[in-house]
Image (cartoon, rainbow, N blue to C red; front, side, top):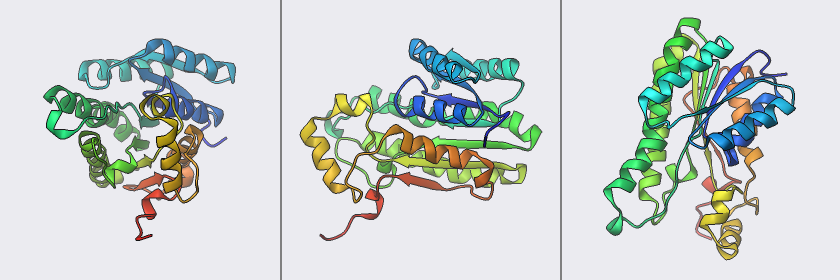
Length: 252
């Protein structure tokens, strides 16, 4: 197994992409701490991991709150003895056009999607530096590359995640810590079902060269590779898991 004896923290692991990441890492041998504001969902993910024969810990955490993040990381180290992997997946996505956008929506979007990445990294980095080993994976988005109407706040935060990833990779490289990002496009999740109609999803699918909307496991498999030692010479990169969408802005 590729992650045998590893310990991973995954934020936003209660459902969707985060849940798939938690389970995929556990399948490869990792013990997993699930951090989420939805503690019931996090506990359900933990139960699925334990059924599969691995260890899990569910913690109620708002990643935009530094005290909660710091306490959670200490709890994980106390329980499992170490942190080898951090996957910053927690995020919110609420569409709104710029002229009607409230300050609170802009701030909350950046607090969770970007500040949360910073706080979680800051909490685990001293431990990883001391051990001279670590894998940090930040979930960005295709909108960090392309942009979209009514999503400027979200796209700005996810672009920030890419810049943060690149800068942190250069800072932590001398400590044998890899820092990468994954940028999903449209993925079949409960959020996508809630935020779009079947007609919108059909139009989305037509724009994707592979002609399908992705599944959470597609993202989880990319994350697994980048946090494994198979990717030990990859750092500072963003892998777009998008069915070719990021390459498809042609004239026809």
